Every structure is written in structure tokens, then in C-alpha cells.
Image (cartoon, rainbow, N blue to C red; front, side, top):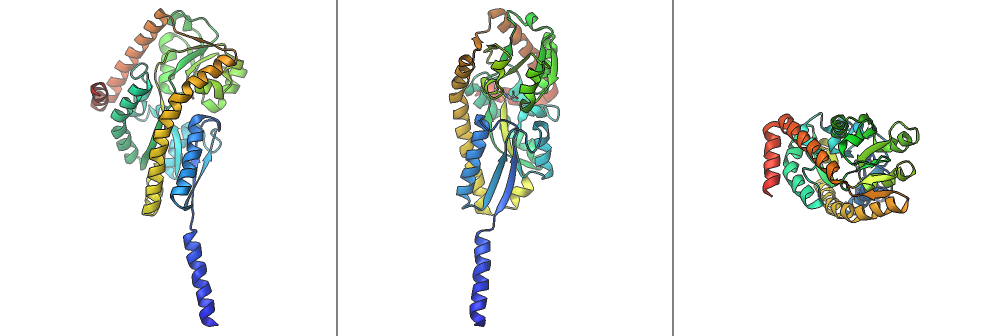
Length: 322
Ligand code: PCA
């Protein structure tokens, strides 16, 4: 009788150990239907499978847990074990976060991947110094200009009420004489509806997510840069996982990165078609506008190289050699 009770108790302990679960929260800043968010949900399902249900990740979309600019600090402080950030949002902490926000430095997917390879070791070093690790990173589609105005040159951008999502997009406004207001994607639809802004620069993806076509009728396809989201993990939370779970997480992260780059590129055309279908005109930028914006990019690259010093120069040199 005693033995039976002991056996039962032991098997209960074994069962609970086998089912020992770790639960992680993953705050994200973009709509549930956005391709980055869908990729996160797939990643979480892959982690679940790869770890035999040991690590359960809940994705909190659309800035519902933390606002976009707060996610990085939440992961650093351990309030969230991992999170998705827009790297360029953190340019004021370190210019390395902004390498993929410099206009016209890398304008297509192949160049964006080269830039990422040059930027990655520096990102990893910086995040490690802050007690975090880079799990994976995926670009937004190329950035263009949403506006109701006809733009022949940058002079036509004067006085626009310009939504910025980062220090660099605010700087563009400053250089062309527009008025920047920093607004994150989750609040963008409301900012258009209330007339706080009448223009901004972003991808077709964000144009669709925010139903920009209900307020703005043109998108200039400038293909100016491809900013990246990154999924970052709190190092202590990672170290607390057993080896097999760590490996499952890293593997699912690597797969999410490969998948994300592919989907971003594939869906770019789909998003642009959706802009058209919903009444927008997609405009090839006229030569003068292109030349003026290129100048803005050159100024910003010069400033960025000054700010980022030898690390930044090494990054750009490495990128250009690839
Ligand atoms: N969408 C995000 C960042 C870049 C992009 O394409 C946004 O507009 O907030």
C-alpha cells in the first residue's frame, strides 16, 4: 500500500516535470494581419513544436502590451522575455541601429541583405552589452512617399504635415521643409483621420495595414531604404532555458528570418496592388524629385558617418565590398 502510494507520487512528479512549461510574452508593434506579425505567430508555433511544448510564446500584436518605442526597454528589463522592435527607432541610443534607415544606402532586397550582414556583428555586440541577443531580423518593403500633393521636386514637400516613425524620417522632413510629427504605426490611422498629418514615408505594407488609401491618394515609389524589424531576447531569460529548448528557439528564429525575407519581397508587389485596387495612384518619382531626394540621402549618410565614427565607416566599407 505504502509502495503504491510512493509510486503514484513519483509518477505525478515525473509527469509534471515532463510538462514543465515556460511561458514567454512577445510584445510587437504592428497589426495582427501584417506579414511581420504573421511571421512571429508562425515562429511561436515552431518554437512550441521544436521544444515539445516546453516553451510557449504569446505574441501581443499592435502595441497592445508595450508601445513600439518601449518594447526594447521592456525586454532589457525582463518585463518581456523577448520582443520585436524597429531597429531605426533606437538611433539616438547608437547610430548602428540606424544603418538601415539611411536613405539610398541600400534600396533593394539584395543590397539590404548585404547591409544586414555588415551591420549584424555590430548589432549583436551592442545588444549583448545591453543584456540582450539578436534572434532574427526581417526588412520592411522599400519606402515610398504617401501624399495627396503632386511632387515634382523636393520643394513641393515644403509645409507637409509629415508623419515620422524614427529620428531619420523626422530628419528628412527637416531637410525638405516639412513639419515632422512622430507617430507610431498603431496610431497612424487616427492621425490621418484627425488631420494631424497629411503625408509620410513608409512601405506599401503599412499603407495597407493602416488603410491609408482612405485619406491619401498617391504613393511615390521612391524605394529609398528597407528598415528592419528585429526580434530580441533577454539574455538571462535565454540562459535559464535548458539546452534543448535554447536550440529549438534558435532554430525557429533562423527559419523565421529566412521566411521573413522571402515573404517581405513576395508581398511587396501584393501590397502595392492593394494600394491601387483601393484607389491609390502609384507614381514613379519624376527625375527632379529623385535627384533632390538623393541629395537628402547623401547629406544624411555624411551625418551618419560622422555620428557613427570608425564603426560606421567600417560597416559601410564592408557593405560596399560585398
Ligand atoms: N512600416 C513601419 C516602419 C517601416 C514600414 O514600412 C511604419 O511605417 O511604422
